[in-house]
Length: 387
Image (tube, rainbow, N blue to C red; front, top):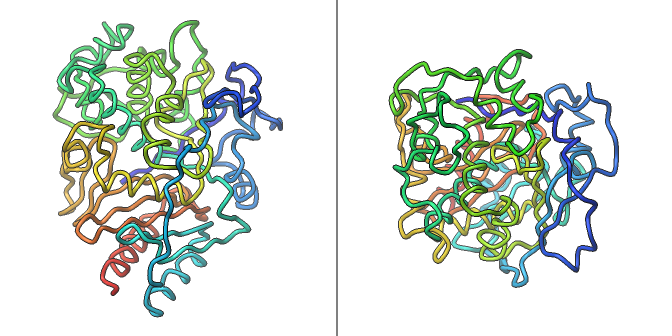
């Protein structure tokens, strides 16, 4: 499984107005307060100390849109602590994986919450591809609102500028499951890969950078027949939601996620050169709010998404060769669980049978590690098996 490592270079220059006083608006654009050199704006090339510093304050370096915390914050009452042996295993993983924080919510109650790297409960940490599952949830909200008529609709119904491109004939569902059949290179080590170049494409007035880059792509398989992990497709999904709703992702998220999930802190979501939110990456939240989002999903998102939406979105729409693993609508599926995950060790893992949500934010030594992902999966299983 490949986890998105986005090139952040373009976002710093996104055009947004200066932020107004926060208590006058619930959603507002922000500008970075610190400048970093152009060659230093790609997260994959930051050293560990730089990542530890910047992951908790991405809004200081990149333009974005802020959404204020919920008016009615969801309380997370304390539950019984994890058994000593289980807690020790979580402590050990937090230290060995360079995690900034881990929270365990069992039946709606907090059984474990600890922090590292000088991070704390009132600070935010970047999400990377965990944001994909937020964008998927906003897609569901737009379906519930009747703004997206059907998952079978062609994407060109909502993004007409994709007509005549490789995305002609691709459905919304195929975009959500990354089975468009469009050729794509998500190699984070290759500076000439699509993922490295997609946000450096020169912006075209009135057109998202995702759409501009999509024009350059070719088809390699019939739509619906081949799964390839493509961050561009989540960015396009974000554009689709913004076009359908007439609102930024952060604005729509304020109504559809932040408020109903009861977030305790503000949401920050980065923008690209055209000022639109980046659907596939880069929102920042408190650890407890990542956990609140997981709890909101676990409970079904009543009143926000269609009934049964999360069962479908987190279901195995695409089955991988490894038994039990697959991909849904921007959610990873595992044996008896599902979740959101991002590079450098960000994750929200949900075990529905045990009513369990486990959230982690991290600064792994490397962007993507199969070994650390497997360790995380094993740790969640251990927590689920605890009394």
